Image 1 (tube, one colour):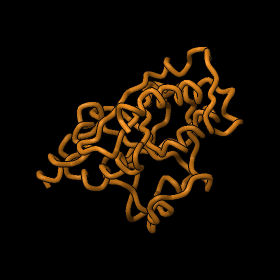
Image 2 (cartoon, rainbow, N blue to C red):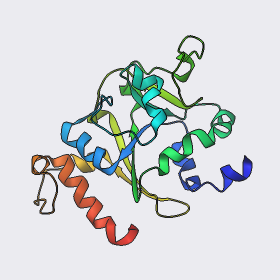
Image 3 (cartoon, rainbow, N blue to C red):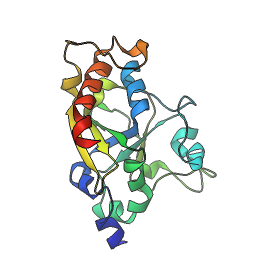
Image 4 (tube, helix red, strand yellow):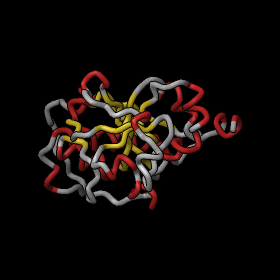
Length: 200
C-alpha cells in the first residue's frame, strides 16, 4: 500500500488536496457546468464512467458527490486506492473544482452513510461527501486542470476571478454556439488553448 501511495500518478496533487473539498469532472462536463453556471446532481445528463456509480449513495439520493480531504491523513492514505483514480480518470484532461467550504451550507459528511441502513448502495470510504443542492459557480475558488497523460500528473490552477473577466476576444473554435456568449466558458477555453502547446 505504501508503495502504491508513493508511486501514484497523482502524487503531485497531494499537497494541494490537503484539507480542501472538491468536485471533479471531464472537460466536456466542465464546459456544461460553466455554461449553466452551476454544478448539478447527475440525473442522467452525464454518462457514468464506472457501472457501480449508478448505485452510489449520493447519486441514489440526488446529491452532488464531492471529495473532502479534511480528514485524518491515515484514513486518506488507507483509502487511497478507492479515490485516487478519480483524479486521473479522464484523458488527457481531468477537471477538478476546488470549492469554498465556507459557502457550502449543509455538506453531508461520509459518516452519514450507514452500510446497514443504506443497503445496495456504495460510497468511497472516508473522503466522499455529498451536497444536496446545486452548487453555483460563485462557490468555486479554483479550477485545477489535471494533465493526466503524464506520470506524475501535471496541473495548472486557474483562480475563479480569471473567468469572471470581461470578454475581450471571440471564441472562434468549434464549441457549442450556446456557450459562446458566456464569459466563463470563453475565458476558460482561451486559457486552455494557451496551455495546449506546453502540456498536451
